[in-house]
Length: 447
Image (cartoon, helix red, strand yellow):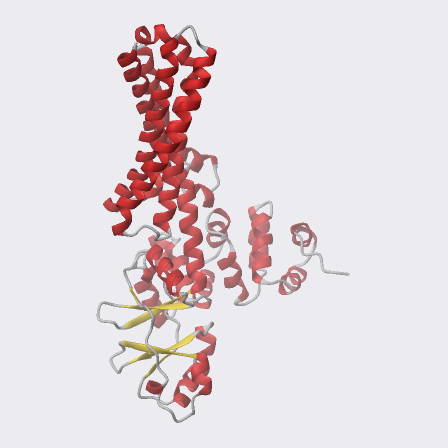
């Protein structure tokens, strides 16, 4: 009979079983399985007891697999500083630094007091880097050898550091001053003779990254060069650490989450802290902007009631006109934002991108305007100018909406801001105001 590893089984053990039973149960599961179960347990007490029952270094692996936010913070808060320090020393340096950054300064100092001095100094240095930089996501555990050493010495170094380093993709080669000179792949090391010098099997590193480089740029570089790891260097090319592909996957997920939430006018923190308070904090500002923008558009139309009374049937088509403008803007902005994120828009391609979107908007506007003219004309033959106003208005809102959709992300990118906000309710609301204005202008010109 297969083992029942459901959250229900764990809850039953927590309530009815002994600590020994709970430990034996958790020994049978992989860290990711335990993390998944802990995250869905009903109470904080159940989660804490299950976490405390995990034996040895497996506890740090489980914590790494628990999503950042409420449950993870709750488990860390339940530990004594000495227990947290043991977790830190069991983790790879990048994960340990992330854990410390989740603590306030007083808690961090108390935890570091229980960490051995050599590791403490390294962790203090890592926590000084920006979380979104190469220094913030690199790990310092790696194998490095000098180019004048032999293959035998490199193999001995691998054996000496095997427990500390973990995954081994390549051996980094440095000069006597610690400057990066290349790397040796595992295959080349296996095929080389023991007495061969490392320099004879060393290959240039496709790309190294400065310690201050933004993580999103690193993710693009890893994708372009198909790298399994990236060395991190300082301004003098001294090797500081490496970034593994699993950390890049985390970066890609984080950046995609950030872009998607901002596309909807909210904040990524709401994903990691799913509370009513956080939801209100992240959604309200954008909705307030949208509310006042929509009210402004309504006031523009209300102010022109005298003009529109000769084409009162046009009011029935206002949602169509304004909705098409907002929709075209959102489409153009979404494509542009994603293209920027994937590095598909180079500096020399900006004008081509704008031309392509402008032409697309123009063709859609012509087709939509013609169809709307026919619909309004057939349903309102007693007001012959209404169809023309509607057609020209939807034409103008689509053209302007598409142009704004492509230009706003490009301008924000140029200014160093996040282009994802371009498809937020702010831009949609701006289109509503412009759409209302276009309708009034067309009515004034034609009636």
